Length: 235
Image (cartoon, rainbow, N blue to C red; front, side):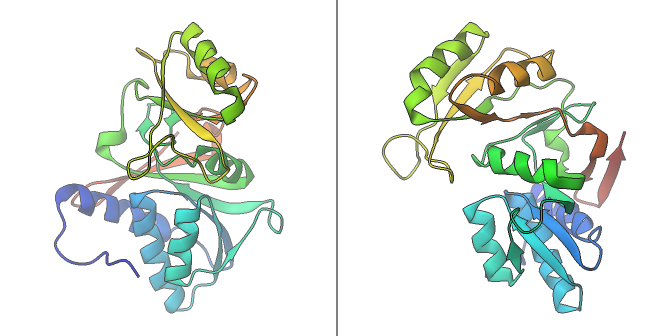
């Protein structure tokens, strides 16, 4: 099991505080969407501790990485085939604007994360203060069928973006998602109408899902971790 103890810098403490707070929102017998990323892993660490104390919960993992971590923590897992309604999904974000619109997908898991968020009654986003922004400006990850990559890149450029195929760090060639597809990271100067851009990208032939999340704001709350504690934000 990965070690989450020991000396921590301020950002790590902020992430831990956010993750632990979110884990304490989980009620007994809950079906929990388990997001992907370092802050979510702190949440899973706390959830595992609560389960050792008697809490019962079942997770729905959004990535192979999260699935492996759940096995390490002995968090029982199921799938959307068994539970198509989830009590709460807890996930991270790359950027969060004041209207709770998000950019996600740095971990290349945004398609499964979107499916789990759609199924959830409540969507809790865990983050540190560095993820809060006045406007969405981060590169937008786009999951694409490899067959369609050249066409999608042309269309993204026509939308005003600068698309780049995400390359692997410890492998030659493109990053391959858990679904067997490629990731294009597309930078836009500033995303003033994220709903419109999300729709435009997600309807391109060959695109599974982009990393702009605007449709869940009505059930979203934000847990912002700081080195000293958390701020809980809701609309």
